Length: 425
Image 1 (cartoon, rainbow, N blue to C red):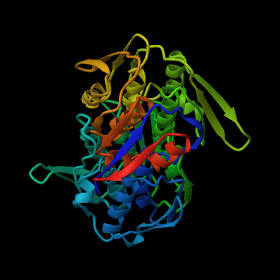
Image 2 (cartoon, rainbow, N blue to C red):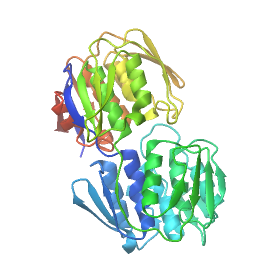
Image 3 (cartoon, rainbow, N blue to C red):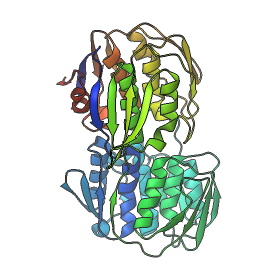
């Protein structure tokens, strides 16, 4: 259903918010459960559109999948009866690409519709295919149908050096290598927290993976894995979104269920801009408290692979810097089309100039409400932050993008004192 947000801006965010399970980890762990060959129970899953889409995909493959309570999903892959994953739900989301490694490892074959997702630039799967071929799979591309087909009578361990650091390729090849004969060594791998979380989940199923979070991952293949119960880590990007929103509204927000070490790049830039970021432990869990009383100072940032500043928070950070004193320079090094939100921020009075992958943001005193539209998931978060800090009323359209990655977004913000209403078209 097409819906939009009406946001009354200019309200200081105050209070406590609890972070949900990590979207980027969940969308890889759900397909990974196929490898278990037994029931798995996943806990702390976020209630977001991408999780629901993956549930439907697994069901169409024949698996029994059900929410047992709240944030717990039970996956029984033993009833999967097809390796044909070429239906619409697959092509509509990027994370469905993880079926390549999971199905190939579990069944030795898969036919997969090439995935879509947000339009933020080229996101090729060439490194995924390179890795599968190195493990002994035969991979064919049917460009007329936009389908990739992979087969392997037996996967064998190999040494694989990725040409570029890719989260998706690192995870996908790791999934297949878990069932390969012998040792696989992956070099120049991604180190993001959700890569580590997927490795931890696979190890809970009986896999042997060492080095996740470093430059080199070593995997000893196992003939069989088993079911387990596993809790997904807190969402790094949702945490950063609320941190930035707190600072943008000159607020005071305590953010619970976080892993502070995952947030160091964001915390550093917020503190550089003048915000206070306090790390705490209440005896049960870690929390971050973000407070801001003054207009932010301009800062420069470059998006980088973890542990650098994440590309997924570049757009929300730009919205924050639109009202900073001075000029901020943002260099986007991951995706070439991740400035699609700029024209919408300009409707709100922002002064942003873009040249290739560099954006210069000249801060203004304040933004004003406008009728704007999200172009992708994190652009939607950016526009919501801008609307929360702006004067007047803002209409944010295409909120199906934010539904893909943020659980109960308007409810969480409203509990902090915001005024966000979800409206039908």
